[in-house]
Image (cartoon, rainbow, N blue to C red; front, side, top):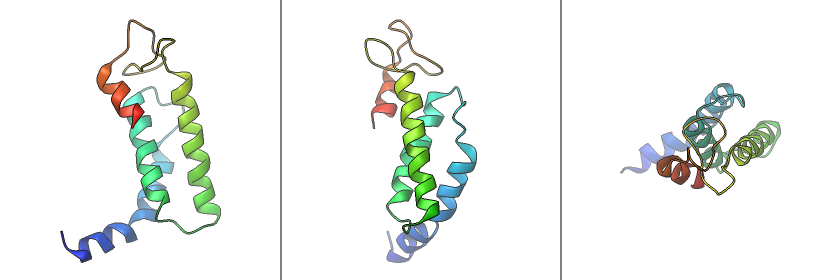
Length: 99
């Protein structure tokens, strides 16, 4: 992996974060999309300058985390979509949300 690729990737972080902000609605039912957006925003945040935009990313990270917490099954774990029950938990989804 070349340093140029890493530099290009780091320079793209604001655009990646904006895409995730624009496309990570809090009413999205698919928990994998919520978890993936959360992971992407948290990674992008490391490369953003302090300011209003990073504050927006921080707020969305907290909001998505809150949505996912509300969707957790009483006994732990998440389902593929919506609020999980103890009988609809999915191991792969639980692992993704747990990252």
